[in-house]
Every structure is written in structure tokens, then in C-alpha cells.
Length: 196
Image 1: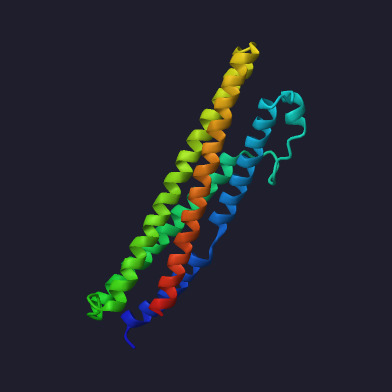
Image 2 (image 1 turned 120 degrees about the vertical axis):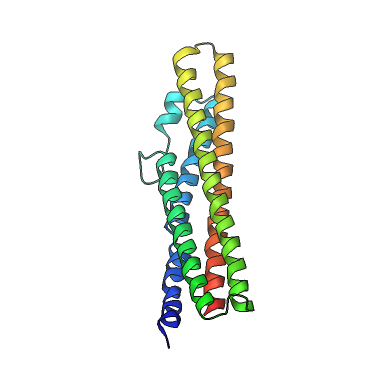
């Protein structure tokens, strides 16, 4: 076995790490739980529960006191790292295939197609995370404006309703990111099992 073949046989370790490293999924699940709890709290306030009571009864999922944005930022970094690792593996795999003159054969072409699908899932997950963080930041701004400048209850309720809609949208985008991240790991795992 020459050094190119040996290198090609080492690639499964990288692919296995990408497909089995699910830290991003766990972090997205944490953020989603936090968004759902915040949306429920806003719903209670809109239904008439005084804000002070709703906030006091708010049960923040672990890690307590950490806003969902922090979990999403960590997840974004994890996904970015997984995508970069998978892209690096693809580059090495391609060089090995060229050296062995197998780059036009079905096994490599099939694996490369799976690689493109996985990268698409990673990219959509990162985009959904970025959008979710933007919606959450907007919701926080609405709450700050609401608390500081809107003493009239009817106006306050409209703004609070807008904040809830933004949090709901952040949760929806986070769910999309979760789905894309899971699909990316699944596709990488399939590519790993089929290539080796």
C-alpha cells in the first residue's frame, strides 16, 4: 500500500468525528428550550399575568442565566468547525483519488455528492442560527423599549406581542437549524459508511 492509499484510509477518523460529534445539536437544543420558555413567559404576560410574577416564576433551562444567543454562538462555531473538517477531508480524499486515478469512478463521485449535500445542510444550519440570533436581539430590544418608554398598557401589549412574535420566530429558526444540523451529521455518517 503506498502513502496515498494509507492517507485515504486515515480519512474515516475525520469523517467519524464530524458525524458523531453532536455538540452542535445539543447546544441548539438548549437554545430552543430557552426560546420556548421565554415565549411561554411572554404569553403569560400577554394573558394578564403581571410581568414581575411571570419573571419570578420563569424556569430558565440549564445553563441557568445564560441567554439562548450564547448557546447558538457556540453551536455556530461547532458547525463551522465540522463543515471545515469535512471540507478538508474532501480535499484530501480528492487528492488521493486523483493520485490513484479513481476521481471519476462511482465511489468517489457518490461520496463527493454526499459531501456537497452535507455542506449545504451545514450552511443552512449556520444561516438559521444567525437569523435566530437576530430575531432574539430584536425581541430583547422591543422588551427594553417597552419597559423604559411605554407606560400605557394598550401600547405596551402591542409591543409585548411583537416581542413574543420575534421570540417565536427565533424558536422556529432554531428548530430549522436543529433539523439541518441533524441532517448534516446523518449525511456525513452515510458517506463515511458507504466510502469505507
